[in-house]
Image (cartoon, rainbow, N blue to C red):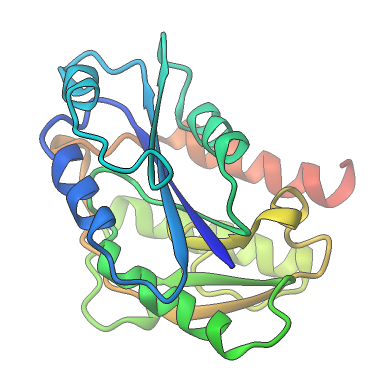
Length: 216
């Protein structure tokens, strides 16, 4: 089994080298690759990535978007490039600690047939997770709607740490993929610290919940 870690990057010059060092030094119980998508950064991130030493092209791949297209498009590019059986998105701002990836993999390593199992890192199952209050209400609302619409029992639908089977990533809940939640640590940022999510993102998420439930 192989894991593809997709890292969408936009103007993360202060942290991108450190997150790559963390990811490339992980000791995981399976083969993995790191795919970085620079989404048209303008703060020097692009130059940092172009000069980053790639010792193993099978383990680290860097793709550049000519212009900023948004995180969703960057993630799509990463998924298209990925060759792993499982996919995981790692934000470059280090709100999510790469050391937690082993926690997500642990349930899969115990299962003989894990092709239809997803693992979510829940910040609400971990004591001391720091989540900005402005995002807390929106998260609770989206999680509640998801649980009602898809008859699941999640605590953190909007977690950024989702370990997903590549073969069913586009139809995750509707294909009745089993979802396991594990506690993860989290150090949230506010907008002053560079947080990029807005109210518009929340409305887009609500639209997606209804669209994929009734129209897709």
